[in-house]
Image (cartoon, rainbow, N blue to C red; front, side, top):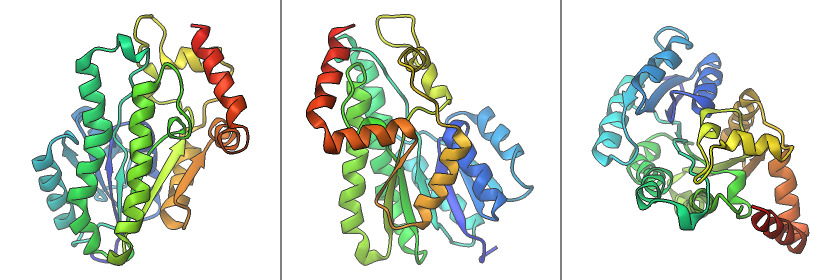
Length: 264
């Protein structure tokens, strides 16, 4: 048990978290699955080799639950936490001026405070495992702000900034800090309905002619990010195009974003 590498995944009941669990388990890692969705956790565990996974029902906003879950997981892993995948998140679309304060508080609580909780509480567990890594899920939305996704964009810029800061802070502790910045993935996050309409984010992506990145490809790139030296790993054609435009054609990109906003 002590020789097995160990990964703890928030948002492990579906989507990217589920795909990452399957990939890492297939490569011999012990997996801790955390989510608020108990049925989804069990479904993911059933996809993994027998005896390699534990499940932890927890809300990332709950600091006591974080501590209890990581303590239980590391007890099962022989004290190891090689990779903490800070992945849980939600999406809220629509104009910020029309977004209910309850939705604002919920997204900020999960996408920002939840990630900070994982980093703060996970630090001591990661420090106890030589060569460990904190990997945060940001997004292509953290490359350049998108109209209609202001709140989500702000949360992913926060994750990006946190990653950069902790990469410096934790170097002396031997902890690598990384982020992944995927573009549109065919996961339940895209089923969120845009405020003030009956369209989902999935509908908007299709209408714009943008592609979905297969979740299996995302998982492979996450494996690479966890083992490599790149601070931010951009995943998918849309994200790569956005990163290129933000760096080399910022004025053109700004005009495109403004045209998109005015065309609502």
